[in-house]
Image 1 (tube, rainbow, N blue to C red):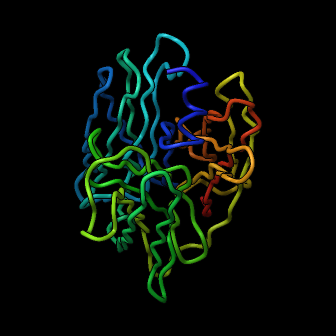
Image 2: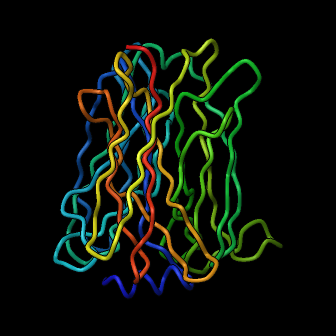
Length: 287
């Protein structure tokens, strides 16, 4: 799959680069690594240690490429399930790839209430799901999912996953064709936003770093917390623009960095002319 094909997908029916989000300040990271065969889809469950629960999550992929011999592994699901992490990834390439899932767990995670919001996104269109925390609670992290993702159905591919006030907002493009959702809706993909809501949550400081991704390929952005603070979670924004010449970015790596003081992302442009913007967010609390 070359970059010309990716640009054609963005302009028309499909999009094949995704991202994800999250991490925890005082939490220990647990890494799950799995091989993804060419053209294959994998689901990964990562458990948190006893007496802890997921606070946030991250992901990565080794040897990601759209033009070379490596795998094109894209994160589809990244959200809390029970007390642990549920992840899913699709390899849109023909070569085997590697997918890494990071679960950030702590005792504080047991006090989180997970709020979900589901939307249907029609094939070839852009949609938003927004999960809002109840009064008295704020999101310290969040995630996204595309239930029923399969090659024969409409597929919602997440481009943005980040905090918005008392909510966690997820934005996606729907690609493909097949199943009809909810009877009269037509061909649609399902998109779910997850907000991890906490009562009496610590004050969160937001830091962000943007990067312009050109035709050269992957670029790295690191959002660093102020001195004395650590990243409890992270997010990303693909800056999708459909007017004029379509452009957007997808994040293929999103995880804690610098011993928990920062959030790191690696992004790729999917428009043929380059110039897409990706923004990485770190949500910081006092160490």
